[in-house]
Length: 250
Ligand SMILES: C[S@@+](CC[C@H](N)C(=O)[O-])C[C@H]1O[C@@H](n2cnc3c(N)ncnc32)[C@H](O)[C@@H]1O
Image (tube, rainbow, N blue to C red; front, side, top):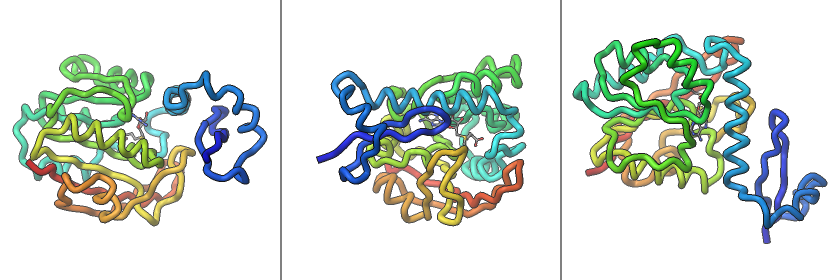
């Protein structure tokens, strides 16, 4: 039997299930009677969205913990792939990152940036000005958005997948990935490594070594390359990242 519980993150209730009644707290009991009326998946999505909206609307882009002026590893690995400039690229949870600026400068023409946060996308668009016009901007949740079938040749994700700590969320992400990435397409993904702190942006994360990440993504993805890299947040905290390149089988 499973029970409903809530915990609080940034003033938002996060509702989840626990399998033992000893984990129940008073807040959970308060919510039990609401059970038939709540769509829990939507509620968790709303909480996630509010969290990121709050971060982006209160913190300048260069001050967020994951900020880097240029995503050098991603850029170098993308260059090494030698893809055509008209390859369809999607940056999952691209936020206000400068990857888009650099990809446009490299001549890539067909880029989509997907993020939960409207503020993050607006900030990137504002920074790019007219250069933002050819970009496809998608506001949505990667665990539920319906992306076009076998559309993208390159899927990039830095510091997004690791926020999906529940097997169900990871499965939903994998479903989106399998639907939208072309057979033979490439996946470049950066997550926290085992040595990194257990939280990112105040939220719990799943930390991975290459084998664990490969196991979670599934047998359709062949690990081609991996590397650990230390990131220093603007406030000086060390976060060890794991970058992996996978290729989807044909
Ligand atoms: C730690 S930031 C990383 C931003 C960017 N990838 C970078 O490296 O600078 C995580 C980003 O993922 C977005 N995000 C978090 N969960 C998401 C989800 N389920 N679907 C889409 N975007 C999400 C957040 O809004 C935020 O912009």
